[in-house]
Image (cartoon, rainbow, N blue to C red; front, top):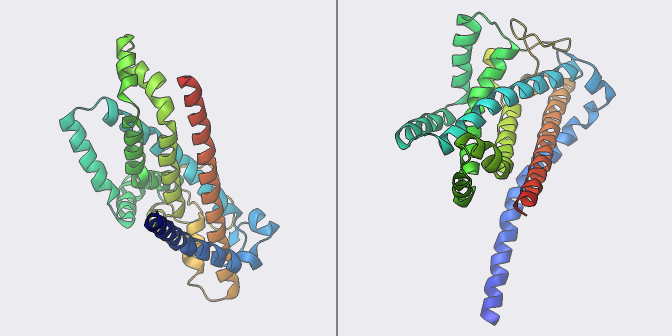
Length: 283
């Protein structure tokens, strides 16, 4: 019993050490960013647009939120539909081919996707630097994650539910929509949150497709209008001389982290409610 207690203590000690090794770097980054951004925080940061290396971040915040909304609509719709098809309808051969190309796309460098988006959307389609070109480039970048998480979430639903639905004579489409999707929603929402988090922190695809709009807030112009976004401010102002530029870059990074935290919290709330609803359905 004494040896077992010692082994148990060693195990929990290693678990605590692993937890510290994960949390400590993340907390150090968060604390450092917010410490550097503290002098720039104020009401004007959220109400005034960026003007060079000074001003606020209202235009970049609005542009980032517009890009995230577009990614949620485009990548969410296509990715969830593709994941449902791979999990429930695709045959072994076609499913294997689609999964292979999805994995290839997941390993594609973001700057390559941005360059292809620049050639295809900005130049060939004559869209210019625009909101639509930027959100499509981001959607292509995160699409494999949504597809994979949706497929995995559906495959984790017990097979007995499919068999029971087939025994009742329900069509395949209704089985997926009414029986299989509700318990898979937490996993699907997690995939969407990961996709939005990746989109929030990306810069390279947007440099080639969205450009940057300085001076005023963007509108819902899909073509030929550049879009401001937070990561551009962090990317450019960090390399500029002057304390104000560095403080604005840190403030943009801090606001980006705040958006990520809100997305994660919102995703947990939605997944938790979906899980409770599924539990009530099982009762």
